[in-house]
Image (cartoon, rainbow, N blue to C red; front, side):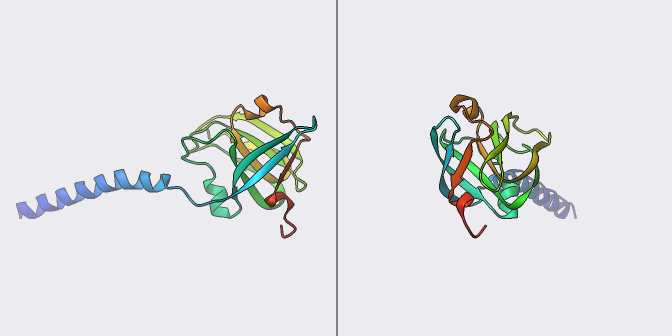
Length: 162
């Protein structure tokens, strides 16, 4: 009887160890996203070039850039909500500080949240109806002079099927 109790205790310990190691690894496993070029046309006449991942499904939008440890300076993610609406986002499980560009159905940036704090549960509000949110590395907005009124252009924002 003692051997059976010891066996179950060891088995439980091994299973617990497995879940402690495997579950975080599974949570950090990256979801697949399509990529596309994205331009930001500034009111000052500059054209800024990025390559973004597209988050268009509910699962992709829920996952976003969570658990990412690095991102190239010219990379980002565009969230396509399918229709214009007020959007609330947060940074829980997001390691990278981000700049968020909120844009209407024409791709015109209406609101910007700079330097969103990693791991924060604070709600980041679009401050009005938007169809797209673009996330870039924190500091890019200030460095490149991106402002409300600038326009986002990509296959996602110009698709007639949307």
